[in-house]
Each structure stands twice: as C-alpha cells, then as structure tokens.
Length: 164
Image (cartoon, helix red, strand yellow):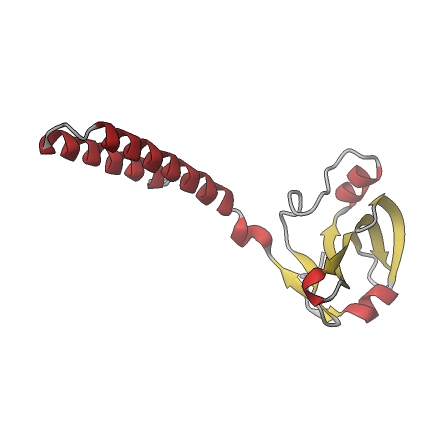
C-alpha cells in the first residue's frame, strides 16, 4: 500500500466504488470501497454530525483506512471488527470542514487509556487519603506524617511506568 498523502476529497470520492456496505444508520455508515484507478481498498467510515451550536447545521466527515486483502476478506465475511475509533489503530485519511483528506496517525493516542487509568487510580488514592486524614485528627504529627508518606508512595507506584 502506498503511504497516505493529503488529497482533494471530491476528486478522491469520484474515483471510489462501493464494494460492500457493512452497516448504516441515520448518522453513520461503514463500507468497503475500492479506488478505481489505484485498485486500493479502504474501509470508509462516514459520519454526519448535527452541529447544534450552529443552528443545527449538518457537518459530514469521511474517514478512509487502507485495507490489505486479508482485511477485505475479514470484513466481507464478518470476521473482523471495524467500529471507529476502537478498531482504527493504523494511519488513515480523514476529512474536515474543507475539501481535503488529511492523513492521521492514531498511534500517538494509544497511551491515553493508560494515562486515564492512572488518573483514576490517583483520584481514588486521594479520596482514601482524605478519609484517612480526617480519621487521624486525634493522632500525633508523627502518625500523620506516616500517612502522608504512604500516600505519596502509592502515587509513585501508580506513576511508575512498567519499563522503568
């Protein structure tokens, strides 16, 4: 497969033929499309968004993920997941509010799930620390210091990356 390059959306769309529509709803459509000139196959995700802040204007967005032969077969026979964004783990073309398709690499966002889990764990530790601190009102400064050190130790464990 060629590397993805920015291109004009209307020109690209005019060269596509739909091979199989996988799923459609009022606002989303998934389909396998083929570029007639290059022979490349893409998984197309079309999203129609109603922009309420702009008086209910409808904005349409296209996403095109290149597919190899195995992907095409897997999708055709229902053996491969395709929902956006969960199964879009490689570079694809996406549109905006103009007539361009721009390459996008989602791999830069892979670590966000780990960061979100760490954030949640830190919040839970903070809540626990606050409860323990409130229960330690009548304890000595030494006991409170011990509690604070234990809290920061737990935060260090959460923030420590596995490769460190």
